[in-house]
Image (cartoon, rainbow, N blue to C red; front, top):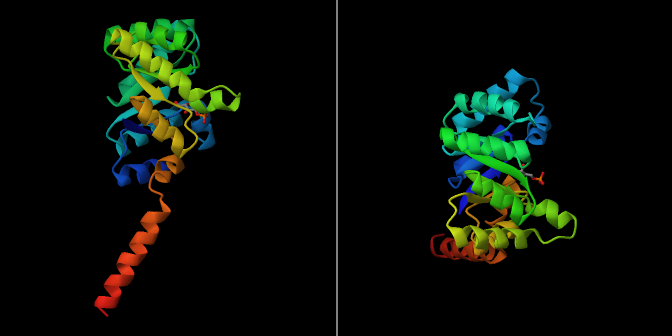
Length: 218
Ligand code: E4P
């Protein structure tokens, strides 16, 4: 399973990259705003900075909601760097734009997916990634992980190449469960990725190994 980090924070992207487990980055307009990145040129420059830090795909979301606007914006984003993946909302024109970009060989990430039917449409349109939001479904008492499992089944039934990018990951167990289900990618915060490191028996065991070494090598 690929690990993407879901942030526009350069320090956190760098830290995940240095850990050696990072396969890409996802951003969205809210994450860019959180970092105080505003204005078209600053946003484009920030994407370039992210692309310099990582080796994998970097999802950059369009703001337009009509087909022509999404195509114009997506083409501008894609021209920035070969790592850029054009992120499109799952609305009618977003699906049309995903089809357009797939015929042009430009990677897409269809986002804001909350149902199997939506994921199926994105796959039919040739999206590179489809992003079901686990956490936001959990927030409204709906099983987000079940959606990942159902999309996995449908994509496997027909051999769709679209990758399932489990998004809106809120904690470490979401990552583990997505791996069990067979999501192709997960995108989550640095805290969830680093949470995978933690086990008290590891800490206790290391402490004992070092103490025993110290005894014999005093
Ligand atoms: C990723 O592509 C999404 O933008 C992101 O995972 C949404 O996460 P949130 O529900 O925590 O905002």
